Length: 227
Length: 227
Image (cartoon, rainbow over all chains, first blue to last red; front, top):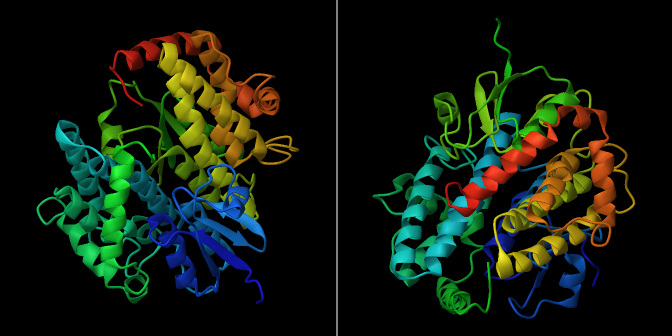
């Protein structure tokens, strides 16, 4: 078989790999997908391609590897300029999208994982922080259909993982973070995002994801794996 | 006095604000500088302009505010396209610069601040992590004069704060992190970077910085301020 010029090293349940898959699909780029056996059995090839962080996703384009999902998304939009625009065209809007993506990484993801892997009083505190973070995030979508405007873009891909994973986390932990009381705009966007055809057809089965998340939660709590 | 179209809210000793000052200077952009009284007395205007993270630097361009130093640097390069190129021109090089800037933020800065604000066994552990991080970072400069190639660029601005601050931190803590044994390429680049005219003339006085860092160290350790 002929080797494709684009190869993605991911893992079926990885939200970070999904971000890149979505970007490739939006652009209509053909690629070969390599599913890594994580978190304990990375392939030799992955370790060679990303010796710095040793993490997925890694995109290999014409033999050259790139890591970090958000960096890869910008690269894809930069390299395949034709077709779907992932980054906003205006420099100020582009900067704002990057700002909010960083906010989501620093505040929303960290606190959500904190809720997922803590208990008791410590959990109560981080639940409050997570709710605050999502409340703040609504500023980026107020008055818009998607974070990218009328259609999904960079920030939607960056934040989209919550739309799918948050309800799974909330069910496992028994705590609600993004709900109609605290963050109704976000909650409504979750539904719209998951209803986009491309997203709908790319998501892993919920029950399989639920089982994996429960397993990961135990691995986090027992210290077997780290953020 | 006529209001300038570009205004930067910073603080004289902030490495993150310095990043943006350097970018503005490289482009030859005139701007008004507002020195904030941090960490305890932010101006009302700053809190209004950046209600999300409440942090400096904030760049205001034609009345529109932007936060996060690396986001601002990209915006500056994107908006004032003429003159000095801050971002690499090639999409792959640009992506690599973003990757390493993220690595520096996630690994080098975190561990360096960890060393600065810990003691005893905990400090020994984080010193080791910091040394490893800087050892890894050398990959981004091997064979080059600066991270940006022959001249300084995005990644130099992102990492440049270490060139000035690391020796100050090392002196205060009495521990060596970037030295000829562990990271000779980085150490040599520190000297080259600090010798660039623009950088040399923009740095705050070392003794004033030393005193402030000692004060901050105590504030961190006592929990008065947080990262």
